[in-house]
Length: 318
Image (cartoon, rainbow, N blue to C red):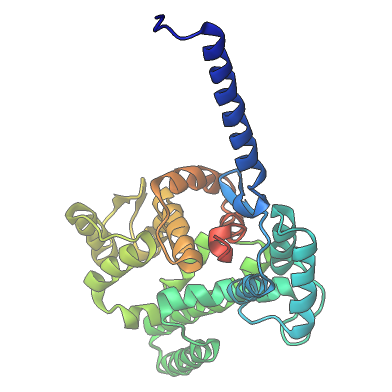
């Protein structure tokens, strides 16, 4: 008896198995619709799934609140949701809405324009970060107090105190003016913090040099100063001793703050802060390495916000 298999029979079995496997794979692939797929474009996940209308409404609502500080009106919400749905939530459709909220200058009752509301919101976020959300009216109130004291000093011939009060008024005025300067593109977002931390109100919140140094590092750089950094900063601020801070020499508090807000460390802090505001988390090392070099070139916080708010993670579609 021949115990060896028939070669032709073996070939048939092999072909039968291959045919079955091919049919199985084709069947499996054909069962996968676009509902199971995500497209990754430039590291930003863009969904092509059939997302529910409620989720799209939530995304539009979040964009309005995060970018211009208010919920969309009914006459805004419906058309924006319809447009996103018709365009299948494409990256371009999302960017179109984001860009309009950041840049549109058409007049709108109560907020001047989307662009004005966007920059007002950034200004308010900066005040929340550094000045505990103090109102512009309260800032003007302090300016009035300083002005009254300055007039009294001038009548009494106390000129050193007079000019000191005028300097405090100027610093508070810089805070108020920074909103319009940001809108006009005269300053970048990192530079607004020069004014947010160099004024009388910030000094009240963080009294004495020790607290000021720790606060400015913690709030703007997301870390505390090293012992050496603290010692140098203390001598510069308290004693007006020349020293090197953030790669440049300075000899007073205002110059120290300027060096800080113009430093790469400050730009890194802006990236971290933006992720915390819009995604409630820190950026990964990969995200930071991808975004920071470009931000150091263009200094435009809008580009960071766009990269975040266009993603499925931000939209809640994942």
